[in-house]
Image: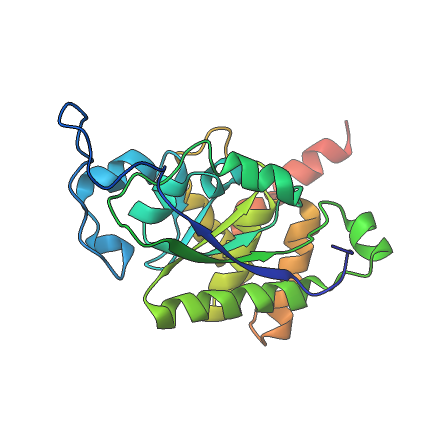
Length: 242
């Protein structure tokens, strides 16, 4: 997809591995199905312990964030009721489709899973953003619209980037700025708190931070002074003579 263009949208379906409906007597039967849930908090605890905080991180009752490994895990998407995916990885389509067969869905559902994928071409550096004339505010708004669609449908939304440490968390912060009317500092702090078990830890770049500042301004939200980054006056006086 050309940089700066509208995101690619596609519907994808995946089904459990083949085999006859009448399994052999000696074959292990599939695990019992989880009840169909509308929101992540009502999921079985075992499922949350298996995935949340390890492979994906939950921002609120609708949004999850992770790396490209998460979007390739069909079993994870099924168990967490994720049917809307925002992919920021810029990954080759054939490679992405191939990896989805590495971890297929194992649920006993006979009908196919239909998922709505949105691929966004998000540059990792400010220079690439300027050269390709990408408007990050527009992309943030499009992601927020996708989340709203998922919420209305009673489904969860996953946003992923290559490592899940920069672009995907930044989009989660933009979502909180828009939905919760948070300042950039508050939104980033909330995302980092929700992802505090990720190793290496999330690291939102200066470029993404500036994009979030512009997004905050576009929403008419006043910034909150961040005292944690204020250098004490005494240290300035002392180092001035060294």
